[in-house]
Length: 422
Image (tube, rainbow, N blue to C red; front, side, top):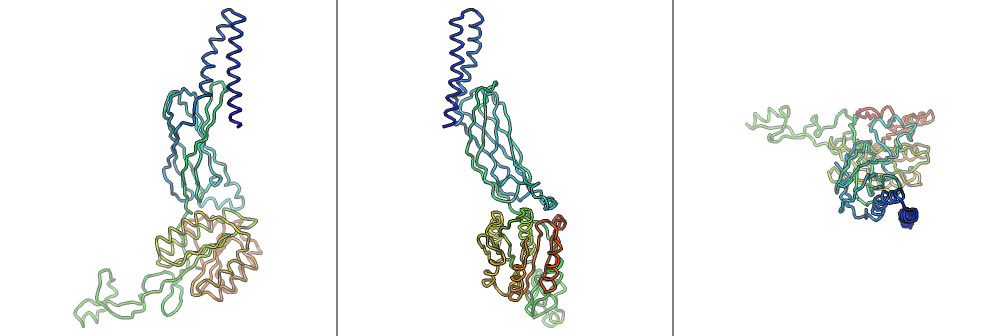
């Protein structure tokens, strides 16, 4: 309705000018009055033509250099416009209408320096490009998006404005052009001081995780390609006159469950939350490489459990889930974790990733420690550094035998990430 009224007003104004100059020339007569009428007549006709020109018939398309990226990457975007009729246009302003999910920047590890001032990473993206099409039937324009944050970002609309030289007529059309940009959480290299191995005879900690325990031989077998030279049993080889190698006890897969705190808090800091997601992805990648079976449990408004399984398809599902995940839910994390405790396998090693600790959290972790093989807490303070109250609480947890690793802003900004007490 508003656009129709604007169109009628502009059309009536141009028509009024043409009629007024014609009436002035008829009644006044003379060279000057007719000169004014004929001089304005081409502009009047052009303005009426511009008002009636159907811009909605344009074909507008958008292409992305990549549709799937990692958080912090950039993409190049090309907008192509095709006009069915080459009506002369002096200028066109093309604007990308960005979703609210893109009004943030992700500078990867550098963003952790702003944990005390997360609002500095909030930035309203605006991309406007001006082109001068004149009689061209097709034209293209390109732009780049940098430091894209994690998430699924729907690019839906492109706004195009045009008008005359004098600004008497202005036209604007919003074209619906659907594209989807997906930014996975940034996976970073992780350096773990201690890693967990579990053998048939019990649970031990070691500095490295191997596929075989080469200290415990359980039998012999014939040599197979790929066996190490040091595994050869020379006595059995001489006795049987064929290459015999020692057979070692297969190491049991260490089942590790990552539990991610995705509940909403009043003092929520999106940078510390992104740190938790990056930790989850990075730890899963690192543990996958070591042959460890890893599961994921995210607790927020909804609880999502991806069972322990070392499959590529599961890994992709986890990445997609963490890409869409946002802090939600008003129910406290310790309470929901306590509800999930009865469903968890008591033989698992649990790694809790959270940015909030309180007395209720400590009570829940103590109960988990009694039931689980081992409980490790990875804590990312919301402000980047822990307070004295938090320091005393953490020392108390450690005294009670709970492995606690604090990742401050400076620790998160290092590459690779150094995670201890795992």
